[in-house]
Length: 283
Ligand code: SF4
Image (cartoon, rainbow, N blue to C red; front, side):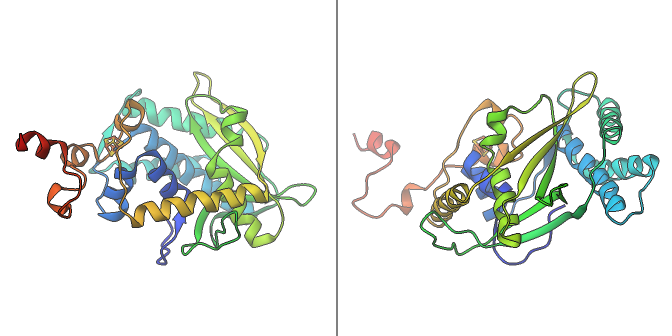
């Protein structure tokens, strides 16, 4: 669930959505259209997040909750997300997808559990500065699944992921999401944090992969540079489609995109370069 922060801000998901496909950003975050469809992978990931958030809050408050109650939280989130909505079941039937989610949670609970939990899904709203030290207009909102202190008191963000395969070292090393979490926690604590991905891998026998990464001040400056460019592109209304099977096959705005025509010719000032159709008609 997205926290209700009224102030305009950037987040990993808004930056990533623009970088992935600017019109998707435009439809959802400029026009405010709602997603008409969702995928089983998105529902599964969100339901697992909701269930494990309950579990982690219980651990943080020294009031652990039982496995059946964690399962109930998973199924309640599943219903909340699917009732009355179109879900694209890509790989599994609805029942198989739910069984898989329960098996992934059981696998996670069978692992050593986090200790010294200091926050669960706590929103962090912090400034973003670029590599020249200039602070951007909008702050960064990061909501980490889990923040803990390691045995040597280092702050660590733990991000729970659900994926069809294990993550690679290079994926984690270049992840913008990890940079967002590390930047936000650094701004709040003044300490360089660790970021760990706990990946619940949807293999035949589910497993949990744990993979760590770190970020430096240079990475935080680069995050500011990227966010600054995205900010300027949005202000200039530069929303060009990035069409690819990976992007478009699960895009909730596919229909809107098919009717999208970009800047219309009548919006061009006299003397500007005409669009291709006008050149053809003029002959
Ligand atoms: S259909 Fe493809 S190009 Fe169009 S908005 Fe969606 S992801 Fe982007």
